[in-house]
Length: 365
Image (tube, one colour):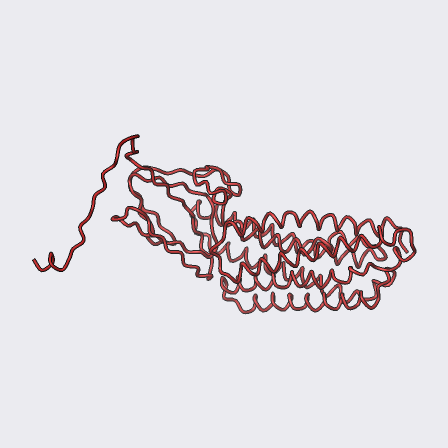
């Protein structure tokens, strides 16, 4: 039997990491719901589902540590029998990680059209789900700390499958983005930024799952693996939300299009002057008015095609958003600001032109 420090200490650190990441999750969820009100309804409900499960997960972890440190403090049971709420950790974790991996598999299928890659991700996700459920059942039946190593097969299946799925997801996304490089520096820089974000978000979950299972196997009779285990579900959800939120800048969230700094990608560009044409995906999409200014947010979106036509009569761009959810496109999101060339002076009423509406009598004459 390990000492109390090696038994409850790692569990307490893992719960601290879980709650810290939960705070980050709250902020990311707020940003998502403020910035992406036009996302498909099912994706918004999916994010809500993850948030609710993460809230339960954090509550279970706090209650799990309350039992040995407060309720059963100083008793033999506190250091020999696993807390009751430890049973919920594996199943809640896979109820979060598996849908996240399936979501990414759906995105990769839309991008690569590769049945082999998608099938492998789905396979690993389902294996992790089965392993997580088996681990919960095993901990419920064998709650003693000294016997936790007896069901290492279920734990290895769960965590190794999760890590393998994350590696496949990250590698396939990076390869897909690399193949879309065009040789133009500006476009390639944009793709490289997305690749770095993909590697960062995908690698952190893979490394954590791998560290969890390796420490569980190589350092038995301790709970050191719980340092990574309790934070694992939060890493999955935060990684997904980080990817979703990378599509918009803080200036859009704050409703201040004049802000020339973007948290994600630094300073924005400001373009003004004569009429220009902006092409997206090789097609003419927007024509600027001479009296307009464009503020480029420096934010780039995945899988969202934005097309707009300039209405010369209304002197405003007509924008149509099509959520294709197919393939990867690098789209530069811009915001237009209309400046009134003739500001109204105090006490001066501006005359407005009226356009007569043709009638049948006028037309007949």
